[in-house]
Image 1 (cartoon, rainbow, N blue to C red):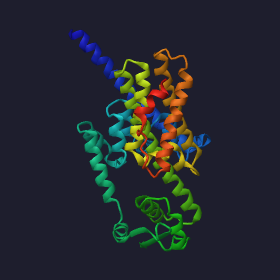
Image 2 (image 1 turned 60 degrees about the vertical axis):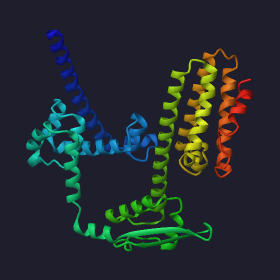
Image 3 (image 1 turned 90 degrees about the horizontal axis):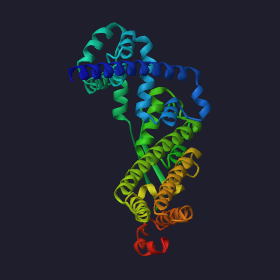
Image 4 (image 1 turned 135 degrees about the horizontal axis):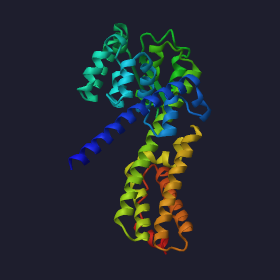
Length: 347
């Protein structure tokens, strides 16, 4: 037993070291991708989105890893610690936020004995401390409010934006028109980013950044829809042995999900994606293709000779219910009447 334990510990330690070396190589390649710009060939808006598209990394994680990849060439001791497995990737990513060459050795020794969460808290504190005093004052005095008037026909924008005027290339009237469709947080972030980075706020900047913000939010919504629906679908297929009952419950689950999350229905139907990047609609189409395949598998398991045709009909029924829900101003519930109609759908 002791020999087995020692052998297993040796193997897992070796695997951990190899994983650290693999992570170090991956970060080097990320840095190389950033320098060469090869990611642009795949249509991504930036390297972070490319990492999400290719490897499924979250936007937050991708950006942290990109920052770590940029910092590691100036931090040889931290890089070595990752390569040897002394520090894991989570600790290294947080450490590179504030480590400097002069204090690197001491920080690596400290990081080995604390959690990655403790390192992150130090990084957050250091980040706040580096904000210049004038930026703090300007941010405190900066505010922006908007509201609709005349039954939604007019859009009013009021703002106090220190440091904004020299950068603004748009009159506030035009800014108000272009702000339609953005949340208050998004609009504030758009303006704040321009002010802090000295970017002129012209029509091209506003249009491009607005589209990026909306696209990013839509991607987040689609990810939530996919994760939620297929988690429930997997539970249904695991708990219900009868294929036809599986299919019926899958359709009912999709309708109930839309009913409970009315704000996402226009994304699911594609109405909210009109005029946005075609990748968003393609991603939503993939979701429904996958859902149709799940229906088809359930019906085939029930030896349904028309499994493909019935799965297609069920999906069209569900999509029709979602469109009706949206067009009715969310008054016509998707699940309304499904219990009575289910018999006809599975006749």
